Amino acid sequence: MPNVVLRAENLTKTYRTAENFLTVLDDVSFSVEQGDSLAIIGPSGSGKTTLLGLCAGLDVATSGTISLMDFKLSAMSEDDRAYLRNQYVGFVFQNFQLLSTLTALENVMVPLELRGERNVAPKAKALLDRVGLSKRLNHYPSQLSGGEQQRVAIARAFMTDPKILFADEPTGNLDEENAQHVTSLLFGMNKEQNTTLVLVTHNLELAAMTQRVIKMRGGRMVV
Image (tube, rainbow, N blue to C red):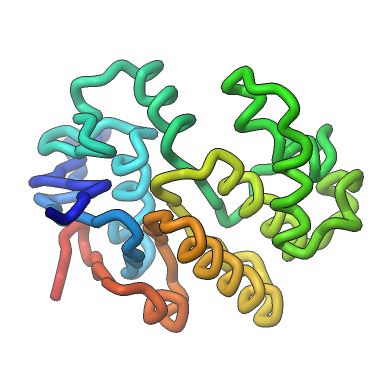
């Protein structure tokens, strides 16, 4: 039996505006199995990032259901969803989201320290070495290039051995050379750890590297 890590069924997200309701997602359904890679593409405003946020439990759908690791997110409290993310989910964002007051090493250590684990520095150092930053451990984000910051973010994302990794425009702020390096790391580590990869991107070359592509337009999935 396939091991489905993420399942979205009839997902709809509506926001109330001053005058009426705005439907950002409309009846979206799909599933992703363990170890698979999926890209979500589409023009700005098509609902890509909203969909990613719902799948990660960062927001709640208006209707429909999302199952992540067999947990129904709609039935969980915000604290329970946060615990689920810390146990099973990794994130890579377009703007890196590193903590400016922490070194590269300290940033990578954060997810396991939040779990209360100790002696996590050796694993963090090994991951930073894996992404080519063994000589930048004690540098702060402001002392790193954009490509280096994103590599720190990738190391941090894999620190918890996530079952699923959500990446939102992971190469969006990078030049072509750094984008290629980051892409290679994402897919390489995804394969090494059998992590499910779900990414939002405008980069069609990046999307083509995934096993499946979902195209969004006007909040709906299109063929």
